[in-house]
Image (cartoon, rainbow, N blue to C red; front, side, top):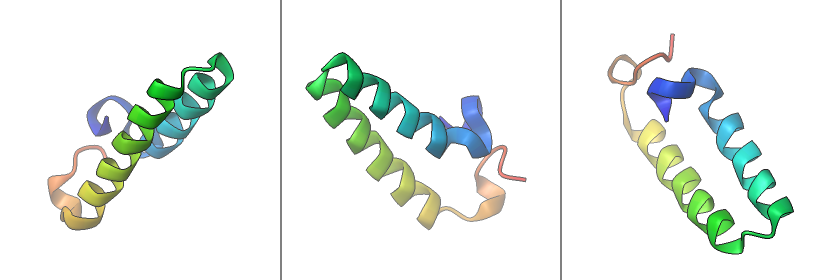
Length: 55
């Protein structure tokens, strides 16, 4: 996620959740909510210099 979207990753994840919700893909929404939770946990515990594209 970080490599592809850099600092925009959280926004991209949120937009994807919204798009899946509009499509009625509840399983997809739940999957991306889990991705969002894991991404946030990773960013919170990873030193800035170890996360790509966070400059």
